[in-house]
Image (cartoon, rainbow, N blue to C red):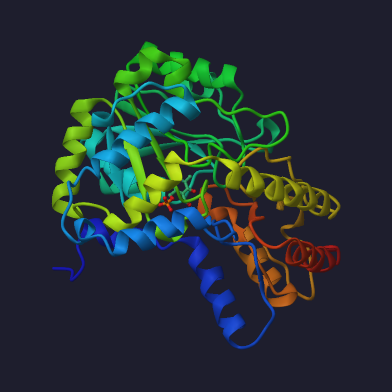
Length: 399
Ligand code: PLP
């Protein structure tokens, strides 16, 4: 019998790991690697949030177990925040506080899927989705999209992929890794289609506040209220408040589903650290001015990123409208000669860019779409320009 179970042994190694560990090794060896890999804001957590956590440390209430579902005041505040930001009315009983949005993703699939249930999964997708689906016994039905539609899936594509086993659609806008934001009409059309066919929607809204230009993001159950009974909303403090390391997220759904997911969480991890929950309470109850500042910095970097990438021959970069990622196609560079090498895949090309230009990017293989690079522009303006220029210099040697 194998030492590791088939279920866990079957989790595939992330394609990001190869580049990431190589980047770290090069950095450790003193090479000036510029990293576009990390999916986290480079800003500090706002001071009032940190202060709330400091105060929480000395409050003995926070030294003890608290309800697995989350601190009652935080669940209330998340419900209020959801009404404020999404115009979606929910009560505290529909909120489950999780250890980051990632635990909410895992628990949502565990709670909804039986073996063989299919999940419609538009690609490029965030790497964690297919693994979570498979760990729950589900089957990802991947629907490819590309830059010609701004990496957005249409109702026609969804309908073509629907089968009698389809139970869930995973929806993510603004999206990781593409930065795509769906227009409100398209979100409404997809929501109506889901209601019509009795398909659940798990909508991951963790980048809700990071939208740029004229783009506007709406929450699917807010524009399609009939969906509320078959919808789970995922969210968290990580991206909005620069709190990736604090590990507070949540899932919102119908009371029976949230109750079931809470039972799972009560055996898996119990309550999220109380100190982190107190910090999150301050974050979601407070103003959105820190995220407004971050948004304008990200917007500036976004424009620089697109401008510099688009100037590289063979690179096509649609303008991302949300999150903090750009997702250019590098397909036209594959198979060409660059410094004596001929990379055939985006994994090979990313490795060459790392070795020769000392720039780390994540190849599209990690997101179900080979032939692309993901660049996170959540890094300082100077590093950003230096990094892309170094990459541009190398790639323009392609013949
Ligand atoms: N959903 C998406 C699309 C993400 O990109 C991330 C983080 O990268 C998460 C959820 C989870 O974030 P966290 O677990 O840090 O709250």
